[in-house]
Length: 76
Image 1 (cartoon, rainbow, N blue to C red):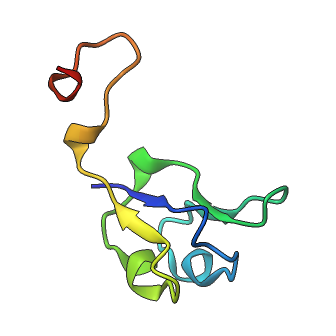
Image 2 (cartoon, one colour):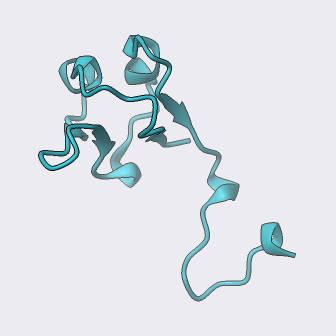
């Protein structure tokens, strides 16, 4: 389950960037908030989730992802 960031909770402290072993957590230069730039490459170690002092990072189940052209059971 890859991680995602609640932008309203993130203050851009960078703890997630420092701890991510796969180097996919980055700070957006425009908004100064963290983001997972490559969810498919997430190792699912959840180090960023544990390191975030604001609980701004969470995990999303694979069932929550749908391709743009697919029919999802979650949309039924």
